[in-house]
Length: 225
Image (cartoon, rainbow, N blue to C red; front, side, top):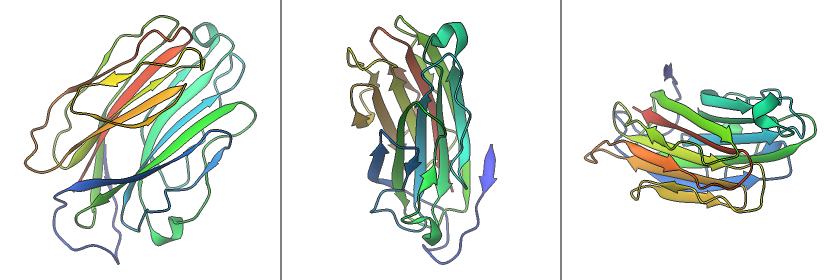
């Protein structure tokens, strides 16, 4: 899917050559989240959302304002047992008005864990393309590993997320050795790999060990021009 974003007032003209990881902001007890404090207008921000309802019902989708989906996966009913959940990934090219603003990422009771991950382009972003979205699980066993298919062009970022519904034991997520782990705790591992110009595009693999309760994987990529 190709989304055109025309933003004036920052960066220089021409194609984006490189993307640089800036920071991550995480919330675990709230439906609201802000972009990282180091974020500037023109940065690309990826939002990873997870909400568990505490019942077999899948939580209602709440997309943060102005963000566009890379993809979304759900679990509920027999698969989710008593933990219906929604796991999604979306993106936004940040404007000045987005800095310091609370974005809503969920509604109602339940367990929340959301991330905003900021990347800085070498020039003004004029278009964003997404692809490669895939999910595996949920299952009480080890879900099948996912291949994060190489993006169609550079610069781009591939993402992989491993999620469990229970915090005991800790998940043992991994990504191909060239990936970077940007977040880990007792419920989730988040990874990314930047493909800047002159870096060879390649498939990656995201996997998770058997953490014992509702293991879930997702992956996708975002490319910019």
